Structures are given as structure tokens and as C-alpha cells.
Length: 357
Ligand code: MRU
Image (cartoon, rainbow, N blue to C red; front, side, top):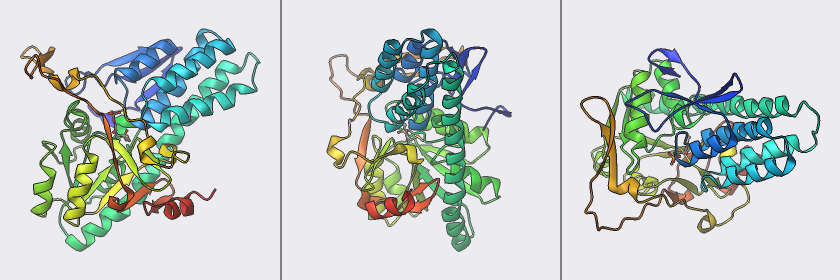
């Protein structure tokens, strides 16, 4: 998608380094950062220079290729894989991508290993881009249906950033929105600010602005009243891990939005590539929920009059805070799962039907 009119993907490999858009600097500064070692990749995931389930999967894949480039020693690669998987716990895409890389490289001990690792990392990213595009084509039908009935702007609420910046391109939740916009359907997006890290305000609104899609940032607690007033036609969110029974783990606050949507008969859709499905965990209580530093709550970042990024304390110094980064929305509150293969019920039967093969 575009930034200042130029097409980008979120990650690419060039001149022996991995390049990423440093998302900790957005929306105030656009900086491309180089990752030269697997340690750089692990750090980028941990401090969220890259974030969003599919993109951290792509970064982990390239991270492992960097490990091969640094030191093609089986023990080093094994240890690197373990550290990459541990860099953030909730998004299943991370483990999925690392496992796929390890499987690919297991039987190879020729001097082709680096180029095979790089090809596989690129393949993981290319595949994600294609899957996200298909999510958009499938989700477009829902937006079109609403538009055909309403004959007026379709208002869509989204939470966090499940946009192209969270993937390789297109995004998951935003892909149907981009497809609708490209087709000329008038859309307007309510963007949840998404405290504490403000991925909605900082990233979703930014990328929608760059694509000239009308959007309005709201405080996280505003969605309820907008739904009561009939100002939201549908919600679309992303997910970091969806269980085979349709339970959806996503950015903290998603569950509350789904409850409000249920109470107001607003359709609540979740968009995901199949790499985000966890076929193993059966009980949502077993999903590892990331707890991040409470400093993300007690401090906020912005720019001063010289466009310098500054961090300030906003809480009483002695107060304690807890920063749970994800929650789980039970399947019963999810209207449907928009995947690369089509739209399914949020249920075991629905997912089994789509992913028989
Ligand atoms: O903590 P983040 O910013 O990595 O969380 C991102 C989300 O919760 C997204 O909704 C999710 O990863 C889906 S991305 C297409």
C-alpha cells in the first residue's frame, strides 16, 4: 500500500539485510530500519518496531534466514528459532513461521541453505500478501451487501491495527475496506485509539489517511454509544490466534467491543489468514496472554513543537498498573470469520468445512 504516494511492503530483503518500516516512529516519522542479525530481528519483534500477527511471522522467518547467514551451525539455528518463538507469546504466526522454516531447512546441508532460507521467508511473505488480498475479496461481499441495502456510506469500526502495517500488505481487517474503497463504495472507518500503545490512532488512522479513506479516531470506550446510535454498520477486527472452535484472541478491548456489538445487533467479523489458526489448543484459557511493561500505560509518546518524539509520565508515580495485551472473544459473539478461503461461522464445523484440506 502507499505512503506518501509510494508503494511499500512492510518487510523486504535487500543487499544482505532485512528492511522494515520502524513502526515505533509512526505516524510522526517514517524510518526504514535495517535488521542485520537474528538478534536484531528478535529485538524488533520484542520492542514492536514490527508488530501484528502476520508481520511478526514474516519477520521471524527472515530472522531465521539472517541466523543462517550469520552462522550456519545447527545448534545456533536451533537456539535462534527458540528465541524467535519466545520473542512475543500470543500470536501463533510466529511459531507457525519458524516451524515452517525449520522444516524446510531440516534436510538441507548444502551451500544452497542460505538462498533456500531466504526464498522460504519470501514465500511466507508473498503467501501472506496473497491471503490478505483474498480476505479483502471475500470480505468485500459483506460490505457490498450492507451498501446495497443502505445506499449510503458504510460505517465500519475496527480495533487496534489489523491493517497492512500489521501484515505484509493489504492487512486483514482493513483489506475488505481497501477493496470496497477501490470499488467506489463509500466507507468510513471508526478507529479505536487502542490504548495503551495506540496502534489504532497511530497506525490504522495513518495508513487509512495515506489511502485517502475517511476515518475518525475514537477513544476506546466510545464504540458502545455509537452502536446504540446506529452509527456503526459492522465491526471488523484482526486476530493473533483463533482456536479451531472459533474463539478469537486479539488486542485487549476486542472482547468488550464484541459484547457491545452483540447487544446492539451489529455484525462483528474477524478477518484472518489461516496461519493465525491454532489447531492444537482446545481451551481459550490455555492461550498465552502477553503481559507487557506497565510503562506502556503510565507513559505516553508524542511529538513536541520541533517534531522530536518525547515520552511523558501521565500517572501518579507511585501507582501500580497492569498491562495485559490481549483478550479472548468467545465464538458466540463472532458473526463470521473472513479468511483467504471464504467466510465461515466461528465454529469447529465452519472452520473444518473451509479447511478440509
Ligand atoms: O500488539 P500488536 O500491535 O502486535 O497487536 C496487533 C493486533 O492485535 C492485531 O489485531 C492482530 O495482530 C491482527 S494483525 C492483522
